[in-house]
Image 1 (tube, rainbow, N blue to C red):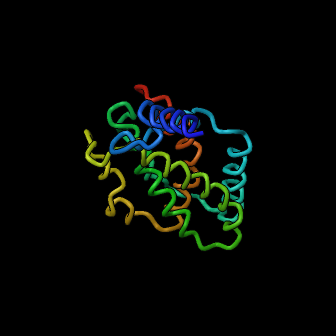
Image 2: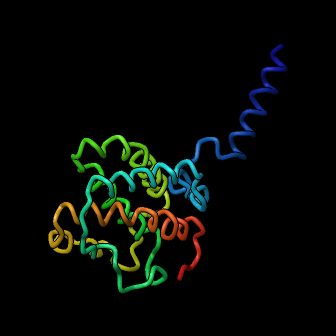
Length: 175
């Protein structure tokens, strides 16, 4: 019986030494964005319902300037761009106080928070080859009324999901 337990202990020790059973340091976090190359239709439908509800409740026209950019995605780190966009989008959506929108925004917010958590593993703290932290500066955001800021975020959700996030998921140069 003792002979068998030594064999099991030896096999377990070899397994632990040759696998990443307990990764440490920089190896602990891995970037897994491939699942965002194409979001499932039911997830995209949740975003469409939220957008449609927003448009029906907030029947106004806005001069949306926040997401109009005069630079190309390929000019900077897509990961950092998507991270900054996600922070802005989540902050704005969490602060929409219209009770008619809280239910339709629930699932999209959950999805966006999950994407943000996955993205944290992909963007190292020290990696900022291009300063996109100034893309959504407080002075730029303060030029917009809360309603226009909300509209800008909601109406650009599909661009964030279908262009920027997909570009980050493919981890390639994007145009």
